[in-house]
Amino acid sequence: MPFAYYRRLNKKQRRIYDASDEVSALPLSRPSAMRSLVHHVASALASEDRVQVERTSRALMDALCQQLDVPRARLQVRSVRPLDDWGELHGLYTPPEGRRLASIEVWMRTAQRKKVVAFRTYLRTLLHELNHHLDVQLLELEDSFHTEGFYKRESSLFKQLVNGTGL
Ligand SMILES: [Zn+2]
Image (tube, rainbow, N blue to C red; front, side, top):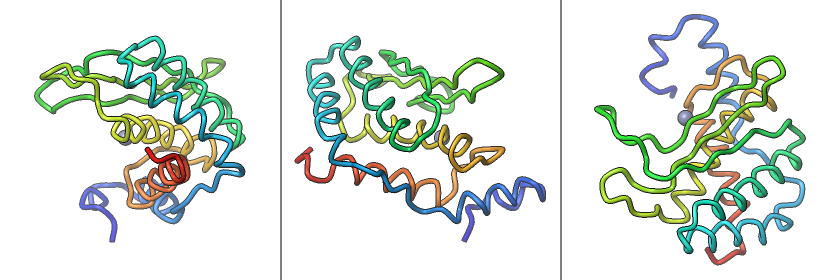
C-alpha cells in the first residue's frame, strides 16, 4: 500500500516511487567494522561538542559511503534546529550537481529547549539523509521519495549499525 500522496504523483513519479518501494534493505559488507565509529559519534554527542559530533559523524558517513561504494557526501552538523510553521527541520539533503558533491546538513539540538537530541534520534536523522543520497547514487533513482521501502532501508541501516553496540 503506497502512502496517500501517491495519488497526486504523475506516471513518471509513480515509476520512481514503485522502484523505491521495492528495495527494503541495504546490506553492509562489514557492519562490525562500523562499531567503533558509531561509538565515537555517541560519545561526541554526549559531550555536546558540535565540532566533535561533526568530525565523528563525517568519519561514519564516509565509511558507510565507502562500504556501499557510492561517492561521499559533504556533511555539516549544525546546532539548533530551524523552526517554522511546518515544524522542526532535522536534516536536509542536497543532491550532487555537476562537479559539486552532494551535501547533508543535520541539526543536533531541538528548536524549543535547545537540548542535544538523543543518540538514536540523531543516528536516524543521519541515516535518513544518507538514504536520500543512496536513492540517487546507489539505486540510481531520479527522485527520492519517502516510501515504505525508503523507511525500511533506513531501519535496515540503523539496525546493522547499532546491533551489538549496546547503544
Ligand atoms: Zn527525507
